Length: 190
Image (cartoon, rainbow, N blue to C red; front, side, top):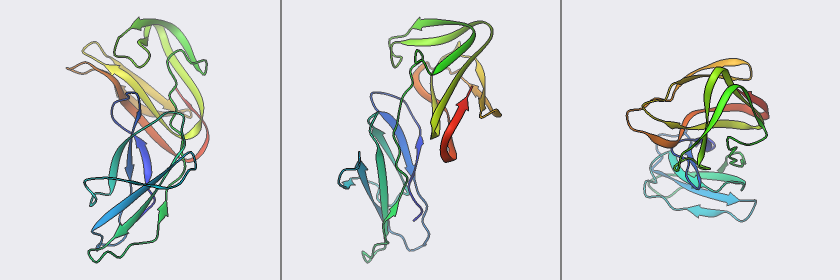
């Protein structure tokens, strides 16, 4: 198979929701064995019910480094060589983090279901929030509701599209935008 690649997806809770995906290179694949190493420690098998799927949804702890490997196997039990994915460390930047800069009018609103019990909401002018970070992927987590609007997202100076924050059912800590990059480097999201 191809190397397992992680994408941030789902609802942020105490742990970071990640979807690992890989692709088969042979039509005779019957299933996959998935292994992980946390903080460079020994490899441990990741138990899954759906061994035939080329993906896995996992909840990972913040501040720890992860690396995954996958083996494909056929109906006779023959296994492919291990294919290693890149090492990564999920981090969460809260709305009051010093690395986030705000322009225009903003206010804080208490929300019990928010990650740190507060949201940063635009209030006037042409609001903008900016984050410069070193990494290979980014995910924006937000609250969605009937009152939710929309936000234009810029990544490394390029228009990445409009993100809708409106929903008929209010939902806290949703991943509303995510993007992967070709390599780990300094990036900007606005």
